[in-house]
Length: 327
Ligand code: BT5
Figure 1 (cartoon, rainbow, N blue to C red):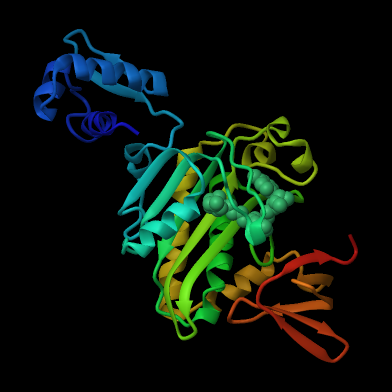
Figure 2 (figure 1 turned 45 degrees about the vertical axis):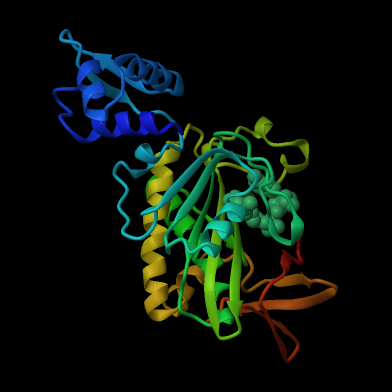
């Protein structure tokens, strides 16, 4: 997003809100020419900002756009670590890939990458994540928890739980969590999480936790192959959802849970996750590479692993693809 737009939006938002700013004042404060300010204001209208001018020519913001612009995401965001560094893109291959690059060059914990559109959005195991422009939240956060590798899979569960809390508190929606990384509403997948970790066995260097949240899609916005299984917050609510407000709520929830995780691990959150789990108590089939495990999903342990019981044998599964056997 253009820096000048961000700077103007920040000025219009944070200072002299009631009085507004004239073009001349904006130009002087930002050290650019008046025509450049005028052009940026036109571009802002184009983006969806509502701007009004008083008789004296003072400009004010009357409507924020539904756009992933730094200033708009940060307006009213209640986080301390998350989004202290925020990288917003119009179009990107994958926010996870970009976040991994940033993490490898030392980006701080809480750094966030978000894009309006992903052209190569990734799911697990080389699968694709459909990420069309402006319909969802395609975002990744860099985390640096001081935990051994096996505890890092808890991060996907945490992100899914944060999604469930925000959908419930912001929109009154009930979310079912399907281990390890799906959030479903009315049986349709609305959330997918992809956590990628750089680590040695006893220490995680960084984890990038990517979340894809379908927000504004109508059924026809999904490709034919996803129409039976995918859903969006708007489809679940029956009305349009404020994408940025939901994103802010999600980031704030996720950070709160993550701070707890850094202190006490996943254990304090497990009961909450288990309560929302689609699989626990049911007969399941889990595939893990060439391996297929069948049995009853009995619990999720403190590493975030699924425990499946077949007769008297328990199998601990760290990653895999689970389906209900009754389906
Ligand atoms: C996931 O993988 O569910 C993880 C998706 C993570 C996406 C985020 S977006 C931001 C960040 N940057 C990235 O590049 N990725 C992350 P998996 O469990 O493998 O599920 C993938 C499967 O879900 C696909 O094979 C499709 O069947 C289905 N799918 C693809 N796009 C979808 C969508 N938008 N909504 C619902 N289902 C989808």
